Image (cartoon, rainbow, N blue to C red):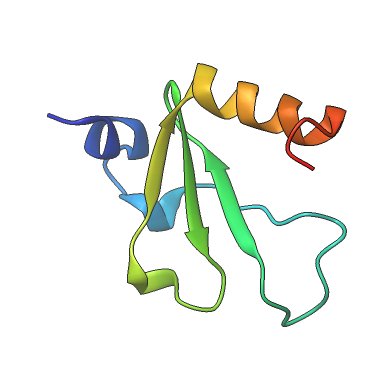
Length: 73
């Protein structure tokens, strides 16, 4: 079993609580993310069936922290 399957649970990725940034425009190009069991799932809001990226909780937290501090600018 991989992180994608185990983190999403029995309902798969569609059963996750997907979120977008409050800065996203309605119907805009943005990404959605959802927390899973020890993982963070990320997908394109315009192409939800196009695949889902899965990050460990630690990797996702580090990425978000880097964005907030401007380390990726």
